[in-house]
Amino acid sequence: MENNQTKAANDNRRKGLKRNEPLKTAGQKKALPPASAIKTTFAPRPKRESRKTPVKIIPLGGLNEIGKNMTVIECCNDIFIIDCGLAFPDTEMPGVDIVIPDFTYIERNRDKVRGVVLTHGHEDHIGGLAYLLKKVNVPVYGTKLTLGLVDGKLKEHGLSGKVKLIVTAPRKTVKMGCMAVEFIKVNHSIPDAVGMAIHTPAGVIVHTGDFKVDYSPINGGIIDLTRFGELGSKGVLALMADSTNAERPGYTQSERKVGESFEKLFTKAEGKRIIIATFSSNIHRIQQIVDCAERYGRKVAVFGRSMINVITTAIELGYLRVPKGIIIDIDMMNRYDSSQIVLITTGSQGEPMSALTRMAMNDHKKVNITPMDFIIISATPIPGNEKFVTKVVNELMKSGASVVYEAMYEVHVSGHACQEELKLIQALTKPKFFIPVHGEYKHLKKHAELALELGMPKENIIIGEIGNVIETDGNKMSIVSQVPAGRVLVDGLGVGDVGSIVLRDRKHLAQDGLIIVVVGIDKATNSIVSGPDIISRGFVYVRESEELIDSAKAVMEHTLDSCSIQDFREWNSIKTRMRDALSDYIYEKTKRSPMILPIIMEV
Image 1 (tube, rainbow, N blue to C red):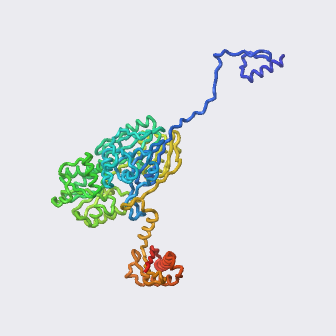
Image 2: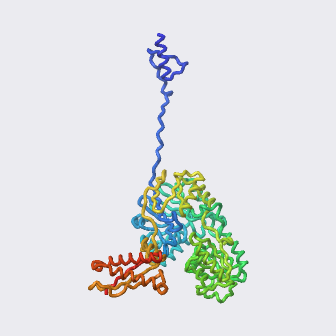
Image 3: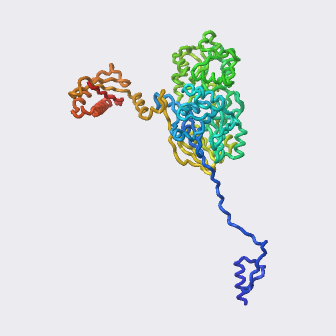
């Protein structure tokens, strides 16, 4: 019996009975507890993430570069495009006028495209639009000034009246298939700039456009920080933000700072003609120049085609307030004393054909620079343009003019947000994912680091490249594939017909020049009847290098004499031998490698 009780006690302990409960022997029946005392527990199930309809973000320009901003947003069978800008050629693109994005992906999916939405009217955001609309004619949505500038470009391309331009405004929303685009007021160096909240099935994507936070703008009101905050409180899936000034600490100064500098400089320039070079699209800057001219009793003349076009559009649409009689025609300048004139001109970047550059080189029909000129360059050189600007400044000073540029006075402020403003937008929107846009890689990288400082997980930051397909379902975001993307070069009326081979030949010609070898051959007798004659362009001046040219002719004669009858039947073979022989000789004598072009004429 004792052994049975001990065994029962051990069994009860294993079953979880407490010591003070009566022991149940092996022969006793187990009493069932009341139903109310029974607690049912279940193992926790893993939380299932709710997948939503995926959305694709496809940048076709504006990443790892300055300019040609263009982004495609795609969901289901709907596509819309944010901006379509251009970039200006660098020194590696001789003869090229502008650079635009590759539209291949858009052309392949033309039936899905619902429209183009524009953030503002700068060239790097609207400059490529006319080329796109020639291929895919879709509605274009933007603010009044932006579409006014677009219409001017469409007229130049013969598209005026053929494209549907739909004016919208901040806090307005347009439908894009299964998506909707809400416009949000931002500050920039041009009026009517907007950011966007893109409402998609996967969540809200905020695109800032080009922006800064200016609490005392010239006109148009301050950036709508309230709306960014409202979106953040409801939940923002992803933020795409301007990275241009991500390397600059602090805040971007207000445009009014430039106005204060103009006041001081107008006083300093008393008795002299004032010439101010700035970006043609900087209407706020032009407004302040006009205001100063009115206060100091000066008339304003405008130079440069793009400057005239923008000012005309801005006045017509009410974005530029100009008192009657302030702006005069260029041809009327001679009726006024030089101390009564302010010239507003293009050329702040030292562009070779701009009005200011032609003035500096004494090549302008209407304006000659004299010591009685006071010149203000109200812009910062774009990276790569520093040498051009310096050259123009030097030439202006050689003519005796006084020249003021950014390093001397605060005659320019940026239109892009610095670090503290970028942090502010991050803090207001509280995005789950972050994609830095609009800048070179160093700008995108620095912007990503700012997001990390604010607590954004590293895996939620994507530094993309043009052509990347960035997909999100509301839970995850990643680069899933690649689409055709790159640059298309525009040279005159030719779009895309200048490729890498043509550029290579142009650079070769620019660096080493050209030698043409002309030979006349009688095909009937396979004999040389004229030549070889040698023509040099950009290599050596023939009259000063007669000995070298004569020796080169001798080399060609020897090469032709050594050709067989079979070679004379295959002229390509003769050309190759002529090119190789002359190239070796020229390099041996000069250590240069000009382009050699053999020409065989049948006589």
